[in-house]
Length: 341
Image 1 (cartoon, rainbow, N blue to C red):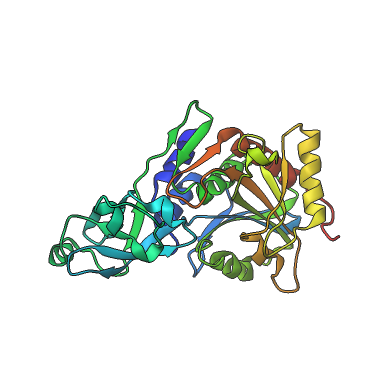
Image 2 (cartoon, rainbow, N blue to C red):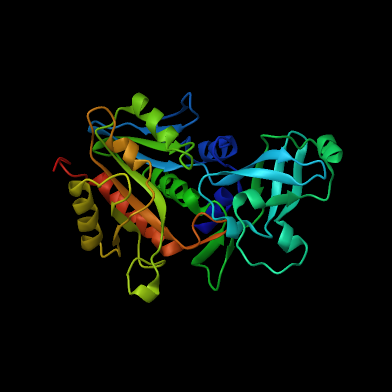
């Protein structure tokens, strides 16, 4: 079960560079759906035909990353972030610069750290640089240039046991994995819905893929499958890793559809699947674009709780991922008759 997820996490796919992720997913699902196509934006859309209402289930392929912004004369590389990344999480991390001639390895540092000086203030993004050990002319020879993507080099692994998984790109390759498994599991199942599984691009920098895909699909309602940070257990809040997928009732951009939320919670109750409910102050997902399509439509978010989200290495629980699959499969087999509240 986890081998497929690990393969997904290993693929480099920051926003705007999702083609390798897309190619991998196509191989996994092309025999399980009626139609697979890529739109002009780069979204991968898998259509499982049905006689019922047209609906959309989305997960984004892109991950956070960096991009070369400037190369100093001494060879130090300044970079821009792709998506929200905490600067402190980048310090002393090994990265690969993706060039047309192959990957070039480097380490992220800043002046005080490099010089073993007393660090009195945490650095900002503009203070950080990538050190490859090469000077500017040598970087040109190996193909490094402004605009190249930079990705962390962490390999996925298990922590403690085979249920706690850690690695890069967990946001949102876990969601992509959920969609792939649902597509494979329901291959021979006739559904009472006309389902479009959408693997979106450029979510991390503006939810752009979800927004453009809606014009082609024009669904009646939709679900975003994403990740979310877990709350501090010291605060006695139940939203934690290993306690079930999280239904996000509200985030900074939307209030989820009550009918869909109630349906998802009822499925979890009947099937005795743990589920958590969360009200979020920050961030949003592809669901906020689904909700605002045309005259507006019902949308909801089912998320995998992740520790160290938006860093170079995150932690999640395989049970949460598996339970997300179970809940969504049941929703597609027994959808609500109406989602208007």
